[in-house]
Image 1 (spheres, rainbow, N blue to C red):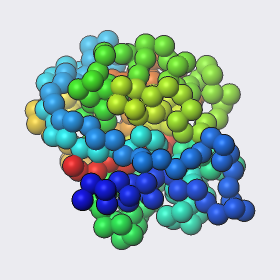
Image 2 (cartoon, rainbow, N blue to C red):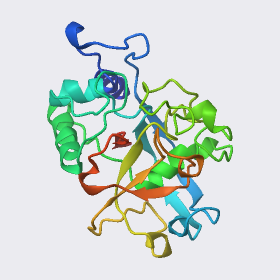
Image 3 (cartoon, rainbow, N blue to C red):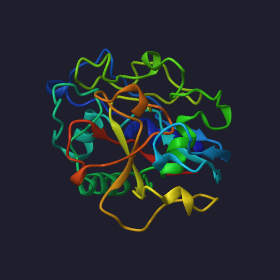
Length: 250
C-alpha cells in the first residue's frame, strides 16, 4: 500500500511539463513529494509578535502528510491546463495569483485523477510542520534562525518568486515554509481564534471573509516570515505573492 501511495505522490508532485513548456529544468526535478509528519503536542502561537498570534496554547495533532514543496506552476499546469501566475516564465516557481475557488477545483481534479483526498493543511498542521514537528530544534524561521538560509523574502528575492526547493529545508525536509509565497490554510481567519481553539486537531470552519495564510512571501519583511506569524488572504487570494501546498491524511 505504501509503495502505491509513494508512486502516486511521485507522479503528482511537481510533474515536468512537455518539452515546449519546460523551463528551469535544472532546478525543477520530480521528487517523492509527500513527507509524513508524525503527530504530537506542541505550543502553538507566540507572545512576541502581533496580537493575533496569541495566546500560546497546547495543541495535539494526529499524523499527516504534507508536500515538501509549494505547489509549482508545472504541477498546476499539468492538472489545470492554464498559467495563472504573474511570474509565469518559471515553471519551477510556486503557482500564485489563484483564488480559493481555483484551488478547490485543483484539489478536486487531483482526487478525480488519483483517488486521494489531497487538501490544504490546517493552520495548526502548517505551524507544527514549519516548526519541524517532533524533530523541532526551536528555530525562529522554518529550518534556521538565519532567514537567508531558508527563505526568499524582501531583502534577497529581487522582487520575484523563485524555484521551489532552492533554499535549505527544515528539520522535516520541507522547503520554503518561510518566504517565497504566503501559503493558504484550510482555516477561515479569525484574529481571536486562539482564545477559543480546540486543543486536539483544531480547524476553524466558521466561514469568514478571509482564509488563513502563513509563512510570508518574497516581498515580506523578516518579521512576517517567522513560523508563528499569521495573516489573512486578500480577496480571492488573487495576488502574485499567495500560493499553497497540499496535505493528506495518514
